[in-house]
Length: 417
Image 1 (tube, rainbow, N blue to C red):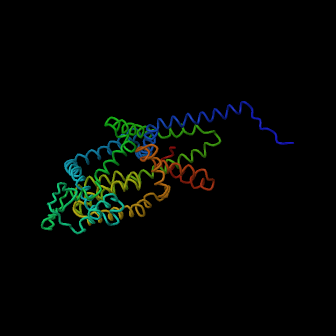
Image 2: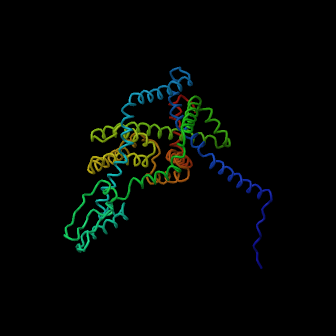
Image 3: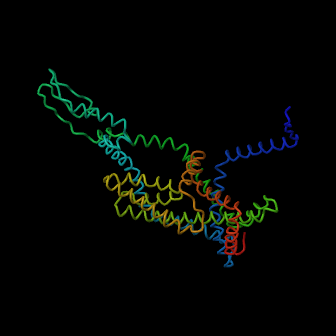
């Protein structure tokens, strides 16, 4: 006889569980649909935290917070405008040169790979053209058999020799630049195809000037409102927690704000230094369009690891116009700059921040880019830092350290939450 009793659940509990599941599904669907707005709001909060700290500095000197926020934004945007106006002529000329010469650089890399189609690089990047070139070499090395009538070769791209059958003399046609490019793998065509396919996932947010301007203004206004009165939003978030958990939640939110602020300040300083050092490095090597390439390296530094790789590709291509050796020097230089940044600059600037493992950083960037495109890639690392901070706050052993850091932050901000 079976002694097990059937599980009986009250109808009220079943309805409650189903309602929770359905509510969770609705929230996930809403977040999935509205994720661009959510990510832009997160960026606004991220930029609003250091803005609030600047407003705290002005408030200690008897300047209203709203006026302090206006001063910080005016100085920041003014410096950007003055720098853009001052560098506009050089930047415009070098950007035009970069746009015109990048196709030439890809063609030159393509031809260089084509000449080495039998080597390792050809096997990796140009397998199909390598087989074609091997067949052509084998055909040219075979002894020519004289025939009764001369053979006329009309396809100059397919063969560079014409065999005169009557005399047995081989007349060689010098290879042109078009033939060299054809010996490669049409690198420019492949890159164009890959970039065109990536536009739908990574550059969806950049579809129009109106979209970019609207997103920038939304982030700017959110950051300004948070900078003017951060305690209002801090207190509103605490109201979402039960009273018995509010002290712990307050410590967690303070630690989260400190971590995100340190991360952003670290990134901004690193962007400025990396952009300046890269520009000087490229100017010393006399690489074409050094200024826009250096600015690109500084801007893409906001996206750790992946951004540095994207910034190095056009610089290496432009250096390849002069010689493969210069391209190798540029690649090594970018690696050295990245190494110094990761092992010296960032640890000094973010001594008390969240140390994110590089493998975890790459993983979250790949996942967010795959799911949400360019905006997901943009917020991946600060979002990961926020999640790690919250997870750390759940550990009771770390609460005392978090409490001490939060008390220091509150004391430094003049007692504001």
